Length: 384
Image (cartoon, rainbow, N blue to C red; front, side):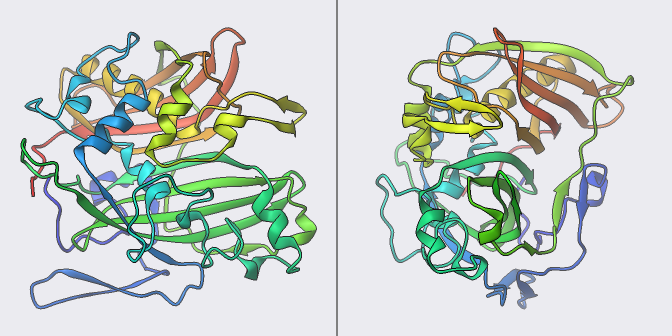
């Protein structure tokens, strides 16, 4: 699907309202149209908004796909299209968009090496206080503490409005630029720490291509030190528990390679917890080993969903929405099991949807819960 120049990051098209609860008004930016009908974005007055830029190449797409296990010994389906640039259907793995959040930075910086953690996208106040801006901490003395505490990824959603256009050139790997606008949706202090939810809109040449929401936990930060904040939630995927109209099926098991966290971090998330481990008293647990990135686990689950639904429907499908909660850590060398509940797959319309969850197989421990994904009939992607 080609990008529409006038599309706004408010919701999906009307025929997708089954999975989206969206505000009809903008709260973090003002949009106007020029004489050609193109949408122009003005700077927001919201103090938590940040405008960032990320550039990627086909090499980055391939590195990400390898990081989530594409074409490994456990794979089933047509995954070569995600890892080989000369494949006739070469394309971006859909959840690659989420890795951009960690690699994005101010346009003035422009470096492409290993970045500090938290990244600039998570430091929403000119790097003053890491993930929680100074304005939401009660005392200046608490700034340094908030930077040093572990940050855990708790939930993630992604709504894809339009496909990214890539350069159709086998000889040159031209960089593609995406503009990001990110803001804080809420800050919720709790006994376990502070939950921070952020929303990110992705733009390519003024066209909104996706909206993502992430909730992270600043583990151990006292609620007495944090000021609550609640903005408007513009894009939320609704998700309900599987019921008796859905058919449960176990799709696949994946063994997480010993170097998975080392490889996945090269897509931008350099949180040291994924190498060093060591988080104590997390819900009564003590973690002392490398924790796999939550988005890497989500990538494995997405692979299972894509392969399963394309085999089931016999159609070329593309992801338009996905959401899940990370409830327990996954470790390298774990074997994980993806379980799905099929819905809306009777062939009447162009949509295929599933609920999903992920278990650590040996321990029978739930690690990803309340997952929901929707795919639609794929169309030929536009090229730059």
